[in-house]
Image (tube, rainbow, N blue to C red; front, side, top):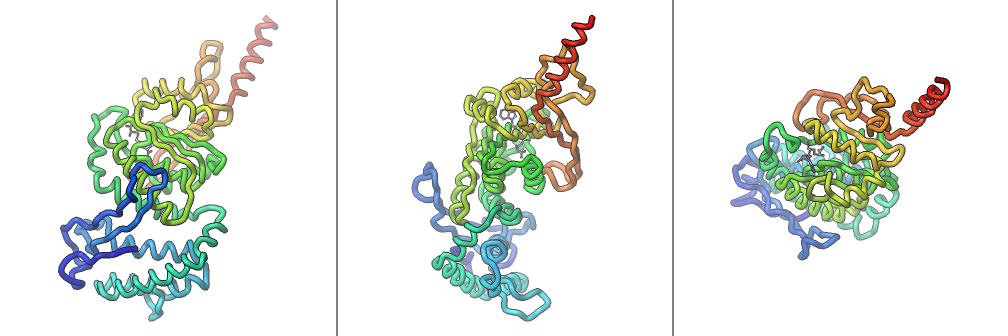
Length: 373
Ligand SMILES: C[S@@+](CC[C@H](N)C(=O)[O-])C[C@H]1O[C@@H](n2cnc3c(N)ncnc32)[C@H](O)[C@@H]1O
């Protein structure tokens, strides 16, 4: 972890400042490379006025804490983690936190050096690598931290550009948050042998999350220019960070263009186990066209959406038997506060499972009715 002091001297390092805060991480020479590498990244150690903005000191502190908690085990992590705010103990992470609280920049840098030396030793002797290899799944707090590191450096600084859409159209932007998507992944059984597709993937958040947390093969497709530009940036940063953390996500791919027209997405849909459509504001024509796209989904595939594709009162009849809706079994569920970016309140989501048995049963009973008549 590299670090550069921001400006005149340690005394102002933790002061709020209007200055732009970081000189960005540099990616290795070829940005098109399949395995981009973070060669160095430097922070100006300043805190911005807005509490929501990225703070390099807190990012470093959180990283140190996540490494200690999730990539090391006791007693390896003791030197980092022992101590609480009320005790006088000497845990390095605790001391870093105290230095931030007391705005003692030099103390922070001294403890950070101790942290760096210790971690360098654990990297050299293979401790961290062995611990990662033993993990069956990545703990969610670590997943969330890695995702937020990539997002904070690529999407967040330009998040305003995502509001550049035509109001009341299907391109209105909004995000599902990681604590909601992790729940969706668990409920739908995503894992390394599964395929996930996000139709309208925005800046790629959910696709990257799925690949990282579940190891699945993950695809996304997005039409809006600003979102695809940020998705490109975020995917590079994410890949580089995964490498730096020594973690292999599942294969992922972010397509640009209309998901109704994309040959790659059509192929992915044939193999998909879970399809996400954040269709909260999609117009009815787009939802109808999506239904036709779902005709190619395999039996058992699940479509997760914020608006239902199956009308609540849908009953299969001779007239609508051919409608794609007749193959979908729907379940209504509830999400809670803190799940989506556009509101703090909860709402409903829908799980539609491709289930041809309803239609087969209807056709069988319809045939026997006709025979009796
Ligand atoms: C509400 S955002 C969802 C972003 C992300 N999936 C999430 O849930 O966090 C929906 C996205 O779908 C995109 N979209 C709408 N119609 C599309 C189409 N025909 N092809 C590709 N993307 C589309 C919009 O531009 C928008 O970025």
